[in-house]
Image (cartoon, rainbow, N blue to C red; front, side, top):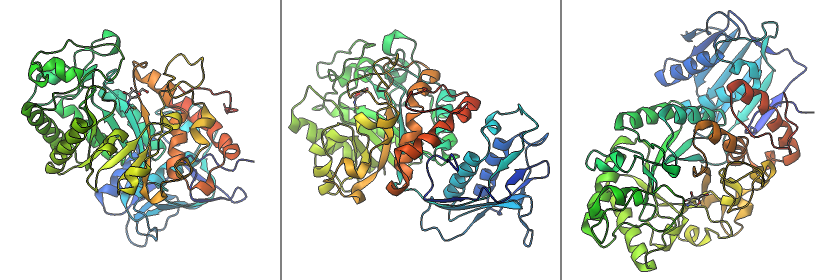
Length: 496
Ligand code: TNX
């Protein structure tokens, strides 16, 4: 009964199983318009197809006028989509055409085409079964996202993840048309980005992690490399330096950030709320200005996230004053500030974004004052929660989240007192108290990250749990081919 297994479900998709399909063969070429951004997407597609149908990947050629689409996969700019991320994909026996107003849309059209091809194409370099043709059904897709913000967050502070591990995560985000990776770069247990003007932050503050391992940090070159890798997948990196709480790693690196002038010990346990910058000291604001300034200069995206959560050592007035001062610093460096929902207690600039995480509360007050909201409600979107009581990894403070809990809800219904226009989108955070490497990250992230992606992309009318179960089940062979360590939720009849 399932006609396709594209996740997230497109706005409109017509699969014509009765019509002859498109087959990738040794003579297939990829044709692009004369635009380097489009050519780069063509090369990405060529690399992805790889050796699936031939001894070498399909060549990428710049289109000449008058050439037909026969045997070709054609990427071109134009079309009638009203969205910068929208696209139209037409697959027929004689060729494939992807048209979009901007390169981002072409990239998403390529991802949809990918989902319509057999999972075995995901085996890079080898073709396990040469007798099976590389076919995509005759299909017409007209698609655009519901929400502009389709994010994931990775906590690289509690446990450190290498550049290659983060790139792997970015690759998997791209498969589901997610467009933000929020990196939680500093917390009590670790500082993970080198800051030239405060070198001890990374050197000392980055030297451990939860449980007392070696930790680690990104050099500035590595961070810039990550930003570029993400950009090639149309993903914006959102750097977070959590403050004024969650700052023990900084307080251990520089004595002058503490009100008593004494450096703290490094911390490798998982309590929250005990640490805070000295918010009455000028040094603290010079520190924040330097850190935000360096990060802003390395980050092409428009956002800097300043955390702001779980401060338990400060009066509400002192906290609100602090947030206001930091907001000015972020603005002075040309960036838009994002904070966890606690910042809504301060007086916020119209451009400031509130990331709402606490279940049971509503971002209505902030929205009424004009703030845009990222929905990260912990009981639906925290992919560090256990699936059920037996999940070996993860936490349980916001409950357990199995496949259906992660999917069967709607952001606009969750907050009936907030107009949908105030919702910027959806983000799924993964806190890393209990996960130490990318295999463990994957077990918590999949299937739930793919489900969050559909919540963020697909219109409510295209989402229904019984139908989605089938499409989600069909991700299993693709994840197996990609080597993704996913959780086989008993709620899904996983395909092999
Ligand atoms: C709450 S969510 C936190 C984090 C923890 C997380 C664990 C938020 C803004 N703060 O410090 O890692 O719960 O799920």
